Amino acid sequence: MAYWPPFYHDNLPVDLSHLEPFDLTVTTPSGAQRGVHVTFSPHTFTRGIETGDPKAQECFDQRVFCSERYELSKALVQIITTWPDRRVLQTWERRSWVYLAIVELGVEGGPYHVFFSLKRRQKPARVDLFIESAYRKDPSSYTPPSRPSPIRFALLVEKVFQGQPLRFK
Image (cartoon, rainbow, N blue to C red; front, side):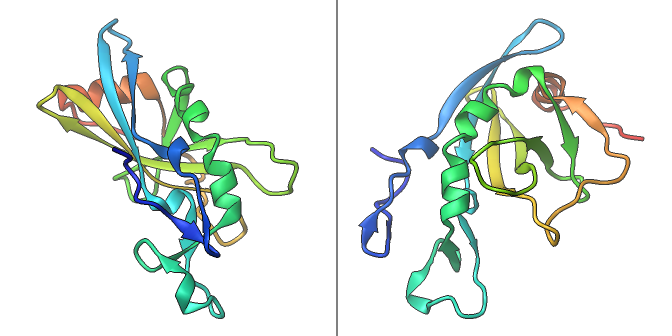
């Protein structure tokens, strides 16, 4: 059974199969193998409603389909599978994380921000990775702190799995 219900934009079907949940194994600095279950929010292919957007195009939590976010979302699985060897940054809210990726689509724009949260799960013993949002930076969007606190993704997974607190400067 598909994770996403059938979705249509302008009466045409939109394929969301690239955003099906998947599992990733992360080798932590201690050498432990940790399972990570990845799921996606509709914010990866929709945007907030703007003045002038037709009411009929609303979908998923009063949002509208965004073709740029949708095209960028096709690279998310490939991007996420590189995270075990990369660093991520804590967001201003300190409840979620962001990974800044460069995705070339032949269009202008800033880095691709991928916002996510991690949660420890008891049964099965794993870490749940929820991709909260993903979009290309524009002048009015999120800007990381001027002195961000980077952490290796594999270490972050281990700390969340162990229930250890995270300390930042």
